[in-house]
Length: 268
Ligand code: NAD
Image 1 (spheres, rainbow, N blue to C red):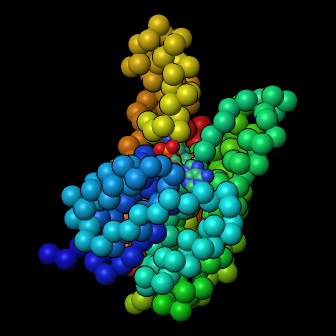
Image 2 (tube, helix red, strand yellow; image 1 turned 180 degrees about the vertical axis):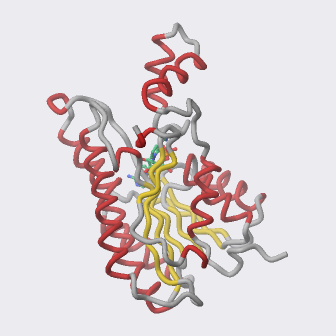
């Protein structure tokens, strides 16, 4: 049986690992053609390509581009479009640095805003017009619970993620009239995860593991106890399944939403 994304092409930033690779794998299971991207060496690119091919993807490309550089991002998108249209854009690349405002290095502020917010603007401004023409398009921005609420020592991250939620709403309004129920329309939504065990949060996990004398399970439980009522981490695959559903035609009228997947974190 043909997968629900057969014939669709998805570009997922930061998809060589972590949440992005989870989303790419969920899309691969439904037959999507994939454009993978991230920072890393050829071995990481090859391993991500092998993962999604094993999950069912037929056509897969992999690119390494630093999204802090908007000219490089423009060149990347141009190259991707030479290979055909992009039906689904998942803005997922992101970085973190924790420090109080007075101790936050200025360069970290620049980098986090560039990757976690400005790169989302760049890919959207370059790819939304061709979605409008096609009458179908999906932009899924990976924000965070920190797009909805704040935490200590995360000023640039929280600022960028709140920015992503705002950017998502503006784009949703600008493209709301495109297409139809039959074509699926063009929607722009944000997913707002709580804790997911990836390299991005590893330094924060390590802090807690050290607090519990090297006991990883106790460190993770302590982290979850503080914020996440379900006391469970979300997996990259859980996020992939949510993203997949947002790509369906039946989700044509869900746009401008910021959807938490956070075990009740932001319900408190
Ligand atoms: P990760 O570190 O495993 O993946 C981040 C990806 O972004 C990597 O592929 C990396 O190469 C890419 N990236 C980083 N800097 C880049 C740059 N300058 N140019 C291009 N690509 C760059 O982390 P993850 O947890 O999978 O993060 C994915 C997204 O999920 C991020 O936007 C993050 O903010 C968000 N998020 C994560 C969590 C969590 O608990 N892990 C929670 C909420 C939101």
